Length: 416
Image (cartoon, rainbow, N blue to C red; front, top):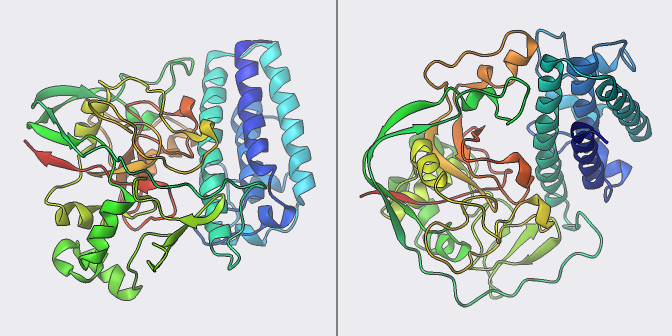
């Protein structure tokens, strides 16, 4: 089998495996406007290949409207907040749609692809990996709102016992000076892959700084909570404090209030005790920034993060979706920066915007990233829900500051 065909088959199969533990009812429901039903993810990723790779007669003309996400130049689309109301087509019909698209793409690969079509196919595979992560984050939000706190999959793991030897937080100094970040440009045939928002490669000036050797833990975050962190406006950005006033909260998403048992949190394997040595996760940018101020530190810029992460090689304990844990793990022993890749997306203080010289691609695919470069913050590093093959030092994720349903956490920084 051609390497590209095998890769396509693997990506599509992984999406199906993520949906496998779910009932048809699970796949139908939408828990909030920012999340989408699993059934919609299954259909939309197929629509993407049908629209941008096959470019032939549609499987069903209505799907062009139902499963377009935000491509205005392709045509009108069903409103995002109402995706959970699409009881038809059925889950079985969506799965038939996936199988048909799989067959047609495989045939197209076998017959040979022009360079531009190959590039769109590779983009589609990375696009599907983004939706694999969204399937996990969206279904966690759905199940986390169920009073019975059900497990995403059968045979959930037993409660994890907290470790007593969390590595001490150390500061890893980094020199200042001129450095380069980003990629020169996405490969002409789609490999090596990078999204357009990661280019062009350019110079930035950094002042000497230091990054924390590991992520902030639940135990450390609990100290912030117990010190009145959610009641002290001096630590909060104005918009973050206004959000707290409008929707009072005093803990990360999915945490149950501390009690005699030490508190509990909801995971994709159901509810279990909070482990103080694990990274805190499901915090917003506002919460991350407030914690950093309380701790006498700050969040890194994305340039600081990338300059440091580019020097870090893959480590055996990197925790991506491939591990199957779907939950961040405590830091292991070792020198230097730890937990750089996987575990949690790390909030940076950088606004999501265009790099100098950036130009969106022509046509509908130019809408993929560029039109979202406003009012969002950059996150780096991937998470326990990210496929390992999907991440790289230059990868730029982005979400609004109040987002909490993603696997987002905190690494501290400070001026040297």
